[in-house]
Every structure is written in C-alpha cells, then in structure tokens.
Image 1: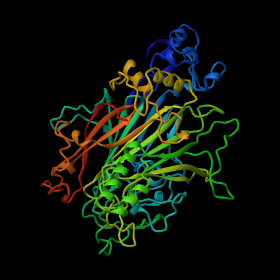
Image 2: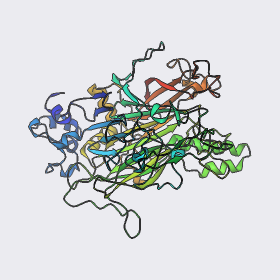
Image 3: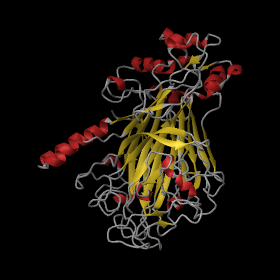
Length: 613
C-alpha cells in the first residue's frame, strides 16, 4: 500500500470488513496512518515545515509511537520502513472492532450475543471477561451458564435488562446473574444489504460495508414471555479509523411474566417480579423495561484487600500490562441543551424542574485512557472516547423533552473469575436510560421511562486518536496549528469523508484530535465525538425518504441521528414498518403498536460535512 512507507504504516494491509455467518463472528479493520509515513516521522516533527520532504530522503527513518526526544534511540513501538523489521508493533496503527454473534448452542459458548471488543493504537479500549469459567449447558432449560458473570450478558458489551436480574443479585462480582438473553437461541450476522424499499443507499459508507447483527430471537422475540421484540445492532466503519454503533430495540408488547425453573441441572431459577395488577406465571409481564448498554475495559489489578478501594495505577515491572482509565464528560451540545431546558422551565414558572436541570449530571461521553502501551514499560499509544445518544426524550419531568435519552454511569471495578478460579477484574461503564419507576419499586414496570413497544434507537461513536506524547499527535498538532487556531471549532480541511484515499483520509486523521471538557486535564488531545438528534431542518422526506417533521403522525416510525467523529458529521436514519402487527395488519400507529413492538432498520448513513463546534 504505497512503497516502503506503506510497508511500515500498513503492514497488515488496508481496510477490511469480514463476516463469518456460520461461525458467528464479524470484524471491521481500519488503518490509522496514511500509506505515506514521511510527515509523521520523528525527523519531520523535529524539522517543522519542510521536514516531511527531508525525512523522506533518509533511509531507515522510523515512526516511533513515543516521545519525540526519545525517538532517536527507541525501538519498542517503532514502525520501520524496512519490511524485514515488521514486528508486533506493526499492529499499532490499526483500529479493529470485533463483533460476537455465535449461537449459544455451540459447545462452551456464552450468552454474549452482540458483544464487541474494540482496539486502537495497540490497546484494547473495550474488552470483556473472555473465556473465564467454563460454560456448561446441555439444553435450553439448563441454566447453569447463567450463574457466572463471564458466561451471561452482564459480563459482556451488550444489552442487559434490569428486570432480568434475580432479587438480591450479586452485582459487580463473579456471581452476578442476568437472564437478559435466552439459552440455546441463535441470532444472525450479515453485511447490511442495499435498501430494498426503493431507496438508493447501497449499505456502505465511503465504499465500506456496514454489518447487521439481529439479536431479536436471542432476547425473546419468538416467546410470549420474551423481553424484546426487536434488537438489531449495526456497526459501521467511519473514515479516520472511527466506528459507529447503532442499536434499534423495542420491548415486547403484551408479554407474559418470565419464570424459569433452572431444570434439574443445578442452575439458578428465575422469577420475574410481578407487574402491577398481575399474579401467577401467566400474568402480564413488565410492559416497560430498563435496558442498560454495558461496556467494559481492562484493569491491571483489583481493589486493595484492606480498604476495598482501587489503588493508584502501578505499572507491573518488566512485563506488559493492560489497564484503561475512564472519565465522563459532557458534550457542548448537551450542556447547551440542558441550559435551554432549565431556562424554558424557569420561564414557565417551574422552578423545581429548572433547578433539577441546572444541577443535573448528564454525561454523554466517556474518555478512555490506556496506561499501558504495546510492549514493556511504555505509556499508552492512543486514547479513545465513546459518545452516546438515545432517541427517548423524556426527562424526570415527563412533559420536558430532553432529546438525549440517557447518560453514562461509571461502575468502577467489577469482578469475574478465570479458568483457574482466581479473580479477574474489569472496569465497567453503562449507558442508562430514564428509569421505569412505580410507587416504591423501580423494577416492577408500569411507570414512566424505560423502553416500551414504541422502541428506542441508541447511537454510540467509538473514536480514537494517538496519545499526545507520540510523534503522530505532535505532527497532527503542527498541521492543525499551521491551518490556524481552532477556537473550539474544527480545522477546515478539504477532506470530504472519502474512504481509503490517502489525501482525504489523511486530512480527516489530522483533524481528529481536539480538546474536550473544561479542565486542564482534558487538554490532552482526546478525540471529540458526539451524537445528537438531527436538527429539524434535516428531518424531511428529502433525506433518505425518512424522518418527517416532528409534528407528523409518522415521526415516531423513523429516527434520524447525527454523529460526529474525526471532525466529520454523518446522518443515520432508521425506519420502522408501519404495518408492524404480528398478523400483518396495520399496527394502529407508532404510539399504539399491536402485538409487536416497532422493528426499526438502518436505511441510510450519509456524510453530512464538517462537524459544527
């Protein structure tokens, strides 16, 4: 991919999308560096303007993902032009999103459909418990595999339903239980096919394919007592090495209460809490569900044995490590939105709502800082951010639209077990929506909030950037400074969102890093990413045949989300079939579906220009 420089920056090749439908696996791989390495070498950084041309003349010049003043002597973490020196560090300049869709009927599999692992710049930014304890289950009624967190959904990066947890659940431990997914039930994974409804989208972004995982049966769409009628997870590669994750879900309408005996194998039983007005096994199930999106990262050690608190990070001596720190942030868009809601409430004389909004914490970004680089004794070579948004728009004051639909919560350390029986720790964060509450019982359903048959769409942007101590980040910073001060906006590059073309993708890469947050600690080159509802001017039939005006009766059938990553904006639209009833008849409108919840499908993702500040 472009001569000697390409051999160093793309030793494993260019962009790639892969789906293994029978094996239940899919992946998206993106190179993070252009084929021409010259502008990113230590020599180019040191020489400033004109350095790239000078560096290109030097034999053996390497890109070292370490501090510039150490690049002359560093070997660990360097990418050499000489292809004979390709080593483990050759995997550094790639981002990879791996997706799990294996049937749980396979031997020793886990209830982890839809889970994912995300790596960039040589570090796992999102991880999971891995193989852990050996999962055992011989049929659909054998619940033994639910008993360990590494074998059930709570230990993975997928949807977890709070109502699917037993009473007195041991949260945060190896014994945490979740019956969110059903045993021995298969979903599907495939490349997203072109729109079959008369549209012109080919299912690709800048020439690269999106992937669809259909987890609806796994979450009970084929059962009267199932949780969800629909759960589709879409993963799309965005230029610059970022990824877009879209979840479309809806609770099952008219569901019955779930009761599982555990069979005769010694697994845990489960009885769903009785919904208001219900009783007995065949009584109505909870009509609205609290659905959390779980995310995990590696942690190098567990809590202190005496204090129970997580100790400060202490790099292991002489060995590699994997440790990612989390910090929440709030995008400028959400801060402005919260201020506008508070001001409107004050204008309307609702001082309680105004005060609630002014003091609310609604973080929609989690910053990920790996402390360990690829190799021994090195700092992390990259940084990451996960930005979230959901289409549900109610706040705790039900009449007040928020448009954010939830927030991120940091859980800290959670414990699992390994095959040898020792403890294994991860750090967890969750996207949580508005909690479904009733009098005195936050899990029994029937109140406000939660996910119902009308459904919800969630969008997550997974953005990465080189760490600020690397020559890559310094070269980008120099390029941005030459373009003029940013002042909270993005440098105006000519890149138009193209895929693997060197000129456009390189421009996107150089614009991918900026400051997020207000404190000095935030000024570390974290990538800016956000997701939000499309502005009303965009929600017209001119965009993908979707998203009518909010006042339209069909507005709830379609969701339009605007996402930003690497300085570039994209619009994604998801449409639901208005004839969504189980018997094929009209469902009677989005707000009152019949026997089925709304099943939204991704119908378009389009580049929308440069991100607004």
